[in-house]
Length: 145
Length: 320
Ligand code: FES
Image (cartoon, rainbow over all chains, first blue to last red; front, side, top):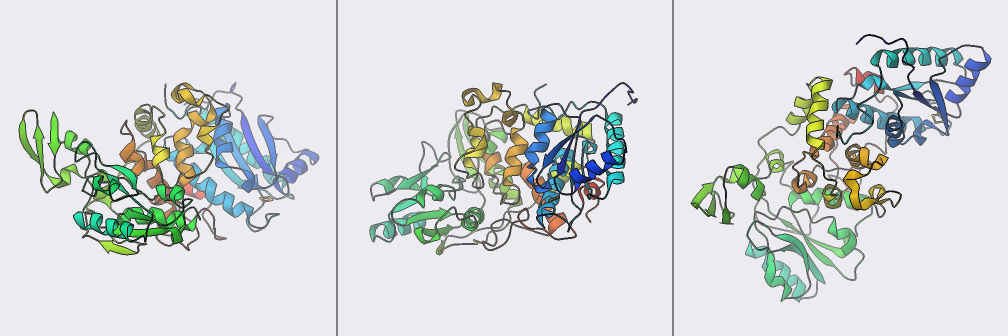
């Protein structure tokens, strides 16, 4: 597939309030840039994200969805991200099983001190989604085309 | 299996149980249906034959709310579902009297048809099956008429029971995950084409949800009044578009792989493949786990370890 430079993907980033959202904040105040294609949704903890949120984002037209939380062991609620990790692993694996490119989903651990990591992760992810192009398969899994 | 009927009747008569949950004889040998029996008279229509495939454990949720004990007949695989419901506090063990019934693999009339038999008038459940058709009598081997799920049976041990009646026979001959592995080996485009072909048959009748012992929420997302549930297949709500993956995820880690979803699907969609994919992933990533085997065990999605595999590693095919 040729990379379409004009294509501006829609990216949804779920960021937990305590680490990743603060990390995004730090990226901003440190004047690090990341593409405006990333729309951040703040959640209390990464485990607040029901797997259906991810699917819902795709259904509503997202081309990529990324979940960011505190590093394992550092969750504000101590264990939330461990549960989130299992759920997302299974969900992503299932999407792959159904033939939906698994590059469209990602989980990253970003602490409040990692502004730089936040901006690199986002740049990288947007690049990846740009190369995958527009999401068509995940809009409707009834597969009635 | 007269023995099951006699024993159930005896327990009903002596007041040990208030009602019996079993199968009622249908119009033909091959269509018995789940039913409650409350009197000796009712019990005349009780049947337990090799076509009694329905998993009765889910009915115990409602029966647990009734007065008095209910006798329920559970096949080995059904006992896993019951145990799972027990661990979720959905059924009341105190109000249940379980007769573990033997199972030699259950039959399906669909498979008899699939074997090429047309115009079926009657059929018995012996080995081989004697089928009477419009075009004369014929035979179908027991194995060919057996439900697909019985070929990958997880074992003939009851995990919970009060008494056991009848013999079981091991029927598992194939690898449970072979089909999942076959799909995993496909390219993304092939996988998508495969599921597109299967899922586009869905008429959203909700049979898979209704029959599933793990699908036991009192209020289900698919019954939301926010969208028109009368014409599900035509509705464009999120729940409808993502039905299959939502259904499968809701039972992930709790599905005992009883195979009822695929058995009842009027469109023949292999719904169990989704469940089995989750089971396979859970087994490889978080250690062997059989839902329902142990009512005390913590489910894989309600527990964790600090060094679980990262999603990104799993996406690359790794496990740690
Ligand atoms: S609070 Fe950040 S992951 Fe739980």
